[in-house]
Amino acid sequence: MKSKLVVIPFFMLLFLLLFSTVHASALTPERIEGPNRYDTAIEVSKNGWDQESDYIILATGEDFPDALAGAPLSKKYNAPVLLTPSDRILDSVMDEIKRIAPNTVILLGGEVALSRNIEDTINSQGFDTNRIAGDNRFETASEIAADLDSSHQEAMIANGMDFPDALSAGTYATDSQTPILLTMDDQVPKATESYLNDNNIEKTYAIGGELVIGERVLNALPGPQRISGENRFETSMAVINELTPGRGQLYFATGTDFPDALTSTPLASKTGGQVVLTHHERVLEFDSQPSIADYIGKHLIQGVRIIGGEVAVSSQFEETLSSLPTFNLEKDALTNLKEEGGFLQEVLQYESTFSANQNHGDPDHDPGFVYLEGDSEILVTVPHSVVHYRKPEDMNNTCNEVTFNGSTLCGRSAEIYTGALGLMLHEYTNVHVLYVKSPLLDVSHYHDVPYKEELERILSQKDISMVIDLHGAGFAREFDIDLGTAFGELIEQEKIENLKSSLQKQNIHETYENHTFSASTSRTLANYTYHELGTEAVQVEIHRRYRDPRNQPDLYFNLLFGMSEFIEWYNQKES
Image 1: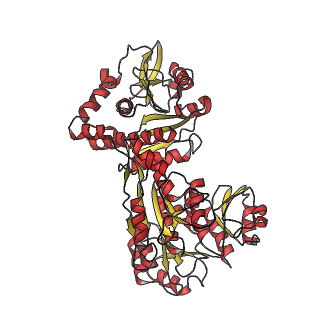
Image 2 (image 1 turned 90 degrees about the vertical axis):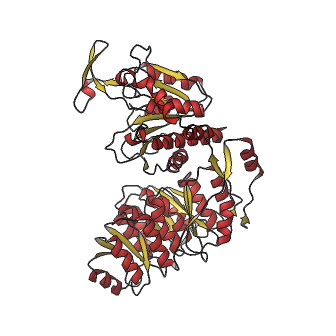
Image 3 (image 1 turned 60 degrees about the vertical axis):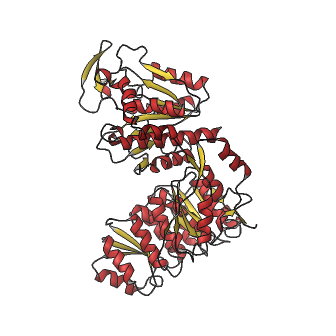
């Protein structure tokens, strides 16, 4: 199959013209490079590890076999991957090791890949070493897999006689801590077979077509799923579209050599991004697989980085990439409101609905919650906008006793400014909103409550395909935003990746998934919505500093803007 220069489809251009909130915004690639592969790896390390780390991973930059399976270790050890020639350690690499000051340098491969002299030099500088190696590339990959100590019962399988497909597997494998095992095209090596059997692997992803993983090999694998394209570049996109869809931070590395993709995978994983194998000078399209141009036009792109100099990825590629239209949303009304000085006043006005009576809202309101209809396919729920109650037996800490409807309950604080956020999202994106206006038994904790009956009624009568459940987290939490998806169970990953991208574009960088609040219990609104009402949902926990518009109005604006951008992206995606 021939690869082609990208042509922007007519339907995409028509889409951009029809919807006034969407405009073709030029991408601005950032290039991370050094004069050679070794210095490029150092620059990648500096981009991702500006502070000390306990570990560094070292591989030879001269050949690929021993390093292919090493990417997942970078997440386990929070370590960059550095390269050096097989017979010596470069001064520049040693300087980077000293800068990071690890306790241990992990060496990938035996003494042919990284000589004893390298190990001795590192030890002489006061650093411990740990060599992971087998008698051949297949055994080395299995030893690396064993070091991962992964509880996952799945593995990535790639041809060990060449590098592209193993590199394409790297980001997903690193994120999920799934081992990368190597095979030959016509038989499964003994080391790979032993690992699969000994670790009760039930699912395997075979990366690449029949020329690199033959049918005989595929049939010998447990629970095999082949992911492939007509060439290495299409296979790279096939892996992305299948396993890591929707990510908004893209790292482009040449697909014709291994070092830059190998060393950038840890950084991509650390930043929630994705490595894309690319042609030296062309942005390719494919006959049977959505291209990177399609991907960029379809998703909320946070940023793009090119790894390596122009010998690896040319300036022509960079110029073509910069010209691609990306899905970007303008919020003129919001921006104007902020620039004209009315933003904080409007936030406070909306929040007054909930802050009245010492955050009790309107205690006399019946039934205690309000539904505002929209024309979006998204419903925003705000269950804790005011003080709410739980039964004493459901409290794990001190009970602030109150009397409610003749019962002794425990009062819980309002999650302030979540209510204002819900109302402003309704105004500026026209989402449906269901918010609590007066103190109630915690509608997110108990099943048989009128609020959930109203939620069921709305979802049964309105064209709603997603619920965003807003919550507030305290100052002590170690995240900006935590997206609870019950570890991917409640909603398609592509949508979560775009939500993360829209927030990270607004400098809300510590946006995580299932960090602390996973929405895994059936009592949570998000879990209940998916399992009982059949609608996708996500629980959005917002750190207190992003709910302090009086003192940090810019952070609250960024939160509102990021959420609004995602909602409009979703609306137009579903339309």
